[in-house]
Length: 350
Image 1 (cartoon, rainbow, N blue to C red):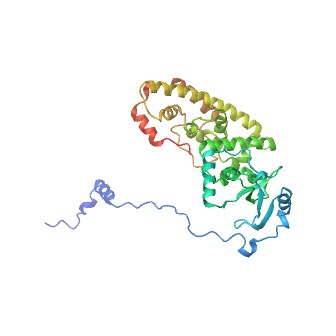
Image 2: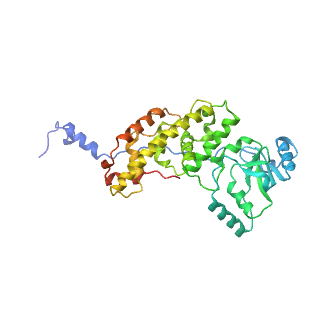
Image 3: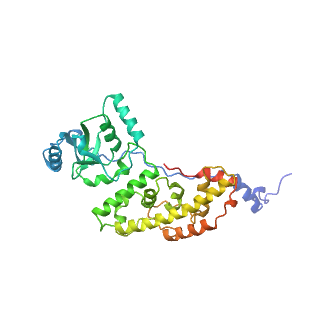
């Protein structure tokens, strides 16, 4: 039977039919922002422009220092990225030292490196070095220098940079051995102490690029006191509340030393709770992580994508709340499911 001509189609008889149709309609996928894959604009010198006379220009003083310390200049050139003048030299091994604020030597890694060089029969990796009072500092060659000493080498090949500030760019330059959290924190705090002596009026904020993260400064103080400190357990909290200070380096270091003491006091109480849970029969490597997660006052605050974003609370307030929370913590409140959850999201020391 035909419907009358004036009768509307069934689909448009009411709001429910419109909702049903809308549900069935395919949704458009959101457009993802993609980075341009086009190559960057050409920069740096042409190959023929790279070679320079080492006796002239900006590197003449550096060449003189190489000769004064018994080394020999192999050549000089402009780096292919920024055109910076660099010198390639052979230096007496005894005149090259690792920067004093560098990570501690790993004997195992130095042994492996010495064995690898001995097996290859060649020392192929020049160290980067900058002028120092007694010779040259290398910000990224501690293990290669140690391997060279073990192998009895008289000299080492070095890529020399006139800018002494490069000695503080360890985190960007050191590719010998991957940094873990402890290594990075100790190197950064040592750099901060050195810079505090050399530039006592400079502010901590002025060295943000060198230090990379304020968290390394705070944890570095703790690692100096306790080599086996579980810094990764507190990294999530500090990432949200720790910021570079607008104080002079000496004053900022004193403040961070106080914060480190407070964090270690909190950690002592956390360790006591962990022992209690172990006595209760809980066997998990994530006991400490679950306690710290429970006492974390910014646990449910999403991390900010901007490094300079204002923290949800001050560092002092966060530590005060953590100290109060750890005193009230009840080990009996932890369930196996809590441990499984923390295990899935727990950070590593790397």
